[in-house]
Image (cartoon, rainbow over the protein chains, first blue to last red):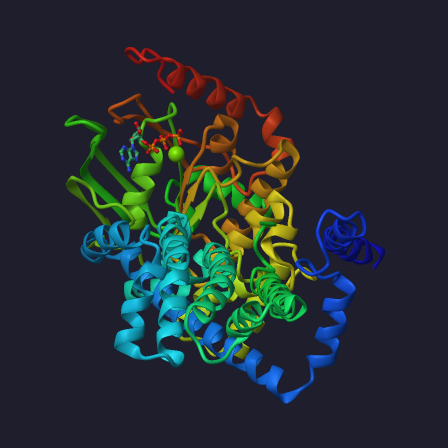
Length: 253
Length: 282
Ligand SMILES: Nc1ncnc2c1ncn2[C@@H]1O[C@H](COP(=O)(O)OP(=O)(O)OP(=O)(O)O)[C@@H](O)[C@H]1O
Ligand SMILES: [Mg+2]
């Protein structure tokens, strides 16, 4: 009980320090209030806006893109990663493709995506999926490649047909790596959806920020920024909860 | 358990175990195993192994590290196919793993995503046994291996000895005719090891499965086995097969004082030490 309280306090401490630093930058005159609004003003504005339908619409647009892109990345990453791990033929095809595509900054493809898919959801979802895909794919691949041979043998001796080993042994055994990849993919999704909305969009949190910046509304500029980081925090802890549940039998990771 | 003296006398006299006519359960016929190693070289791990194991026999394999004991066990398990020769179980050539041969590994190899009950139920469910029935059977087995009350624990929450009990129960669950045990007690402390040896022996005395048991401990091999196969350093060959002619059921306390037991241990230890010609005859 007190251990969880301590843990929560430890988690809050850096955030509190960050806000304190932010406030002191202003208080001690290092940053003019016109450029860097005080945290109090930003949180006040956030509180005022939070339950207005306009703001909720922006959040919904961003969240939809984030979830859709992330979900596509998870499905593709896990499927391709598993396939490459169990089939040398598929691996021979996937490996060079991943080597070429993984290091490309996917944002560079965004103008092309806009032209092909338009300004609406599709282009942003695609960009999010493209960026989140690789960490998930790679960690799935490594996780599935390193499954202990004797787990597979034990299952086969117990009568599991070869074709079912993938779902009965490899997938659950690779789960710790897969979820680690998902966690990285989720953070990337948050970043990329915001970025895409900043570049070209008619709604979403990233769009809000750009709009505010163009009109030098510094307080309004910080509101979407704080919102996306809080969303990231919430999503990350949800995923952490899922991970703790799914990996309850695995040694601490 | 009650007919201790009667049974041990009978066994000491007659060679085939428990009166059953000895029929071959496992037949290893001129098996060799060559591994491709890094570079263009290859390594001969097993050379021309022939061995017949009777139904219901407890056979141990001893030999220096790297002599191919595990490899031989994996071949019988169907996990590895030999480069040469055939291994048969009940007369049928082994082409892959099957529920007639249940492995128990030194590393336990329990499924970390399943709890104790789930691990033990796994094989039964794979065999198409109904969930409720599989659960009832598995609970009984867990009780038998002394883990009643631990059904909902996860493997990581158990000690090494308990993990190996779960692994043994998981394998016994699908009732294999042959148990393939690769240093199953090698990772356990001496006390736990002794307890598990006794428990294994009790289980074996009851249902007389054929056991192929790899170990590094001569005492363990002599204590448990009907036959001890001693292998030579690489390439692994069978140096000698020693019949352990000690009465059953065996009691550890009695056996340790038994001069015949002590002689087996000493003789076999010499056989293993001895890399050159075998001048000792068991
Ligand atoms: N998959 C493999 N690829 C290449 N060489 C292998 C492979 N498996 C085993 N070997 C080699 O075969 C030989 C026998 O190995 P094995 O594991 O069967 O020995 P062992 O008698 O069980 O040893 P230990 O007592 O240390 O467990 C060793 O020299 C080992 O390096
Ligand atoms: Mg070995």
